[in-house]
Length: 95
Image (cartoon, rainbow, N blue to C red; front, side, top):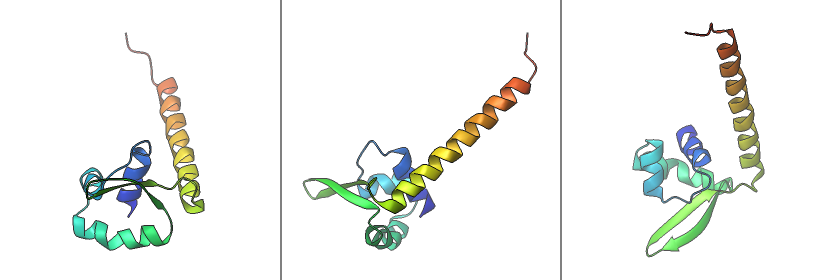
């Protein structure tokens, strides 16, 4: 589930089919089908459009659970950036 949510966060500007999610999150189709009802029940996904028989989805950024996950993601990214910048300041300049 973490891989799927992480993939959807990283691609939150784009809507995705289930096939896109399987490929991008590197999970099997049976795994996605197993967790999909949980994501739907929690209201974490929203259907964005239909193209033929295909349905495209995105994270529902208005959902309170998704909002908290996105806040946590932002904090973790900031911490990682600060750590990286701190290590760059400490490293000796190369000639």
